[in-house]
Structures are given as structure tokens and as C-alpha cells.
Length: 126
Image (spheres, rainbow, N blue to C red):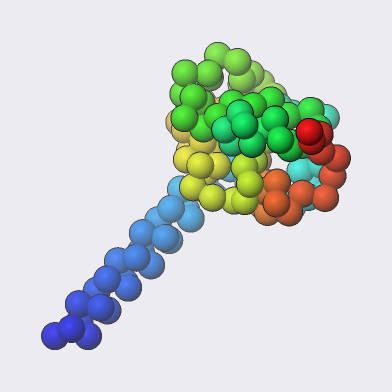
């Protein structure tokens, strides 16, 4: 009986992960350092981390819009330009932000695959 319960839990978790994967893939394109770097000049670079982390270190040219304030800050993000999102690593915040932006009508959304932790380009730090 316990084996069936564990199997059901594992199948449920895998199903949920697959569902989230598809949702994110429909909302945004996950890109590596090179492609992200190429798109920075034409797009809007948004750091989703909290202001303290942003001040400590961020990608050069990024604006800080913490993920919890994104919905109320949509007016500051243009729909006619690509939106480039990142956080420390590719986690839930960046995925939720991409899904929200897609629902709000943004079309060109990109996520930095390894986040700031894996960024090889220029940064500004204290």
C-alpha cells in the first residue's frame, strides 16, 4: 500500500513539473549567456531580485523590479521591446514573472538560463 502512495506522489510531482515546464516554454524563451548578451542592447533588462541584492551586484544596465512588485510596475515595461528577465539562478520567481508578462500581452520574453550566478558578462557591484 505504501508503495502505491509513494508512486502516486512521484507521478503527481512529475506531472506538476511537466505542466510548469510547458507553461514557462509558452511564455518565454530560456537563453544562454551569449544570446542574452546579444539581446541586452535592444531589450529591457529586468532584475527580479530584492533591492538589497540588486545594489550588491547586478548585470550592467539592468533595472530592479522585484518580483513581488512586478504586477504593479507593468506600466514601466514597454510591450514593443523585448523583456529580458533574470534572478540569482533560474528559479520560480523568474518563471512566474514570465507567465505574468505573457498573460499581460508581452510577446518577446527571455530568461537567462543560469541567472546572475552563471552570468559571464559585465556586472556592477558595490
